[in-house]
Length: 247
Image 1 (spheres, rainbow, N blue to C red):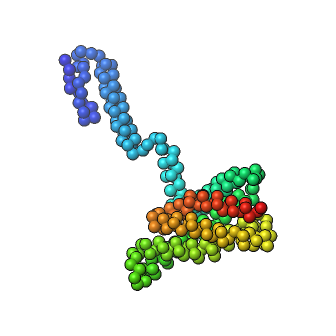
Image 2: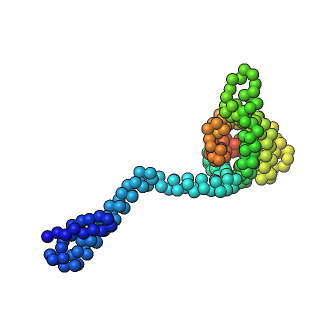
Image 3: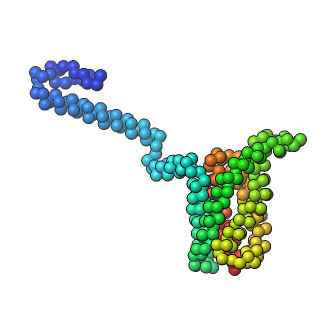
């Protein structure tokens, strides 16, 4: 004969006391509890797996921690990101140079230092640039017929590329690289005369479309990290130009 037993608002059939001893009843109850716990665990695990791919777990954890750092320490995080990618970009350029097998540490320090300094400048400069050049200037020109958002992207890109880059970015770059590499002033100026115009042309060819995308599509807090990643290839180009100017 079976009796009806209740446990956690659920019922199940257990052997009656008259047919078996108390230990068998306890074993039955224990098995039921363990079975329900295992079932709950499997349901929770399945639900968790639907939103979290174990194969991507390390990348998701790193990305999550990076975003927390970016929210908490935006300037410091941008500086470290820029410096690390600049080091990698210069390393790629130096390893690609078959004419020299010696690693130029001073050049690497120069690129890392410049990128760290300039990312800090960008963190201060970009919010002001976005605030001032909001698209109202271009949009107010009769016959343009351009919406405010598109006008803002073009204004911000133009100001950065045609004013900030030639009159702030490159002066800081050449001065800092010359100082760290121990070049006298006349050698630094000779490097400027040889490489400034060719680099500026390459800069516009590469960075104008990249920055249009940055100002138009990238979330504000992610714009500097995006530029750091895009700057990896640009660092390779800059590093190669520095190497050629030393010959």
